[in-house]
Image (cartoon, rainbow, N blue to C red; front, side, top):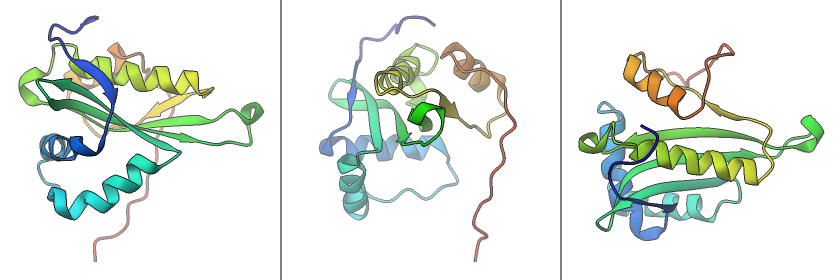
Length: 154
């Protein structure tokens, strides 16, 4: 899985990518409600304008077929080097296992290194060995114990 077997262009997301990204998010977690493009447009513009957040996509035939989000946080420790967090990694179901998602994840890691980050973190709740193997193939290692607190459902 070192090279994509499908020819895609990996780039930073633009305004027109919103419908394709929302379609991908419907595959990310089938229990989550994903907004329509009109409802999400304001939030999407805030994301694209953010100095701390970048969305990368793999484009195939004019649409985003894989995506992930990179957050880079300024930091006062580690010689003031920032750290990065990867979130919302998803590849179109029919293209999984062909190196497309790996190329997008490698692009965000490269951006984090270029911006001086001392580490890139990714959390997953998935237990599927294929998903865990994918993240390991992207260069992540299992290490620290993660904790989270989620807002209670009202």
